[in-house]
Length: 144
Image 1 (cartoon, one colour):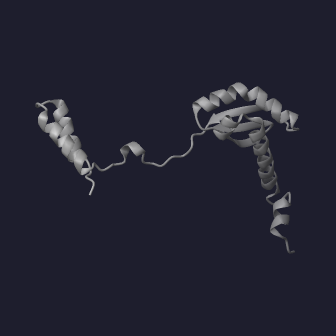
Image 2 (cartoon, rainbow, N blue to C red):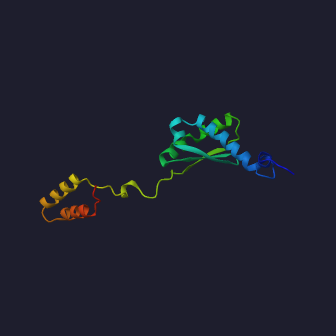
């Protein structure tokens, strides 16, 4: 037997269920973008649909809270479009960021800034502030 990829994906015993679910999610995603307020639609996305429940991931707790308030309206919007929707579940799923935050990235001091800080350090009396400034100068990368 010679099967094409498309016939395998469409077959019930192949990947048909997965492909059908993926197509359904694509349709629901389009509907969600039409139903949800634009600013909330940009800060969230439709993640799944199971047993009549639409699962939406929000990028923050604030967005999730607003979407939870709108859940009945969203469910009604899906139902009006012919989707069996028993409810909308909202989860916070923050966007992935790089492992190292910007705050911990070493940023070099310019030569002028370095000299200014050294002058400030030298003008201060012996104190915790002077010691902290000395440590900052010592640990800072210098711009070339």
